[in-house]
Length: 176
Image (tube, rainbow, N blue to C red):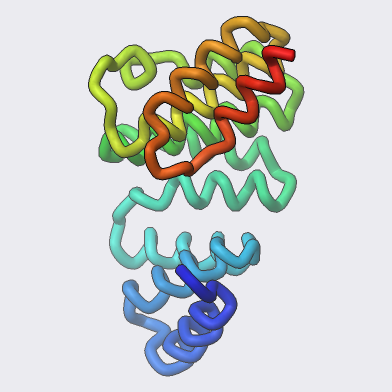
């Protein structure tokens, strides 16, 4: 976490030594993702999926496609049949990526709708709530629904104990 470039170098070295071990490929994919090397991350995470059958990196793979400027491919991964097998947190991340891909394509209303669902309506705060609510606020703002966006940014600011977002600044910006 503290030095993604160094982590990537170590992961590349490990891959050179053990290219058929899924955990090594996973480490390289995640490290590449954190350094913005989306092509490498996507290739490695695809390999992990082939090796293990585990779809848990679908959200990261879809985000890599977005990072490579291919929102259509990101949306194809969102619709992958294995997405139904994802845990709740991973499904939320996939919805966030879908919303971003829809915004990339200029489908602003669809970006808002992509985030609406049971997870957004949940009263209980989970580890992914801050990210989901923030993404929803951004989508609402992009859709020109500024009052709603300000309310959602305010809700994020109220629960963002870790300072993960700039929600307070967004509320101030939208209030002026």
